[in-house]
Length: 271
Image (cartoon, rainbow, N blue to C red; front, side, top):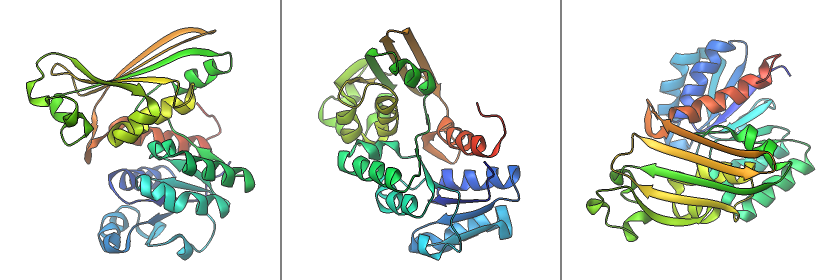
């Protein structure tokens, strides 16, 4: 399909990256960006020099002059709840960066119902991991087990629920501090929520997806390991992600994954 107008919800590091890349790739595409009132002027100061008249920055969806083809959420879990249903009801497909928000069963049910009612699509990117196409395909023949293992440096778990489970300062060897399902992982560890939720949605669901969280002083960045077994055979996918330049808490692959989904809507050949 042709791409004429994209609205990006959230003008942080990822939102700014998408404006820059989309403007360079598709200068004919109109870009809108929704940001909180108190951050509006700062967002304009960042985005207008990038895309000029091709981007407009506003504080609400109501200010949009026409209906975009696609809404891209880059504003965190609260943005999914605040804007997801509204965008679907206004005839937009919605691409969600904060997939962890879908661990909230009530929110997921509302978004699913809105997408069905208004004949729109809720798009789930692979995000910081890979192989979700293979995992989702394998699910069609039946999966018997899906396991996700996260390894980070002990300091990377500071300020999280991990501090109540383990003495992070004393970790000297790779240590598993929590084993749970994907819903609990997404709920207790929001910084891991997107990956755990994406794997769960592509595979066997939140409750059946096994999660192992580890503090590892030998870890080279944030490491994600996905293992799956089923009628198709077995797979093992491991990633060592580099951080996003403008936001070290986000992996570079997360922004690239969103851009790939958007490009697939504009290009004649989709991969």
